Image (cartoon, rainbow, N blue to C red; front, top):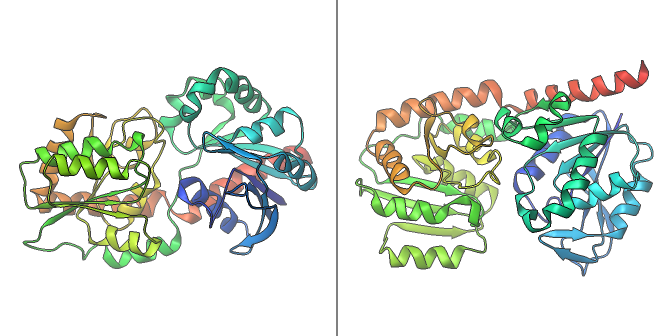
Length: 375
């Protein structure tokens, strides 16, 4: 079986949740021939052939970038040329160049669309993009979705519900091993409560709401750490200064090792996202694997299905400063509650979100599709 994965960019040029899913799929099929077809992260770079952790990666030259989308004629040519022997094509949605390749019939093999999120980021171009997306979903042999919430709250996916299969994201085996060292031993007495945010500093993450909620907290023996960079970093620093917040730290972009350390040393994670553009948030799983409670928001996406209100943390109304401040106060002031949520979070990840389970779920889908061909 040959598996080809298609997306706009890949490690080490760009990480994030989609890249982690691509890597997880690659690691799950060591017995298969594989390839990634992506674009270069700069117009200055020519097309290259290299590998990442043993998997061949074709990086196609782009001609321009629009709305964080690299456009590439070479990408279309390579999809046609390099998928001729592919059995399974995995399109990590959204990336309009792949939709164009599907429209032009440039691919070979069974088409699996991994629906990571909607296309809110292409809102201005939605009238033009929607027909392409509809065509892709009609052509898809299977549609993979990370959560029941993402499927049920998408009118578009509801039209193709029979094609949809839910495969939750996972954390790596290495992350679980690291989490196992900390999960039951991270509680400290009489210390300043460390509240952690991890992610890109972009509009839909709700970081401004988090700063206002932190300023409103009654529990004052707390510090708030933002791990990650992004276009709103300077604006958020100015907001923190305007609110006269002294216990706020912005680390900027950090290594995976440093991110792991920050999660290990925090008391709980906050994910204050305000838009369904936040479809799942793997960072929730990463925190839960370290026995950390999570405060998230009740988005109509997969987010509240990952960390569950009253079981592994608190879920609040998106954009509500008052509710977010109350939830953080409750966790900051109750160590026993943090411990209870954290233990349940750790057990839930071990039960539902392992790399082995994700591999089994993908293999079942792929083998089912190929069995139809053989039949």
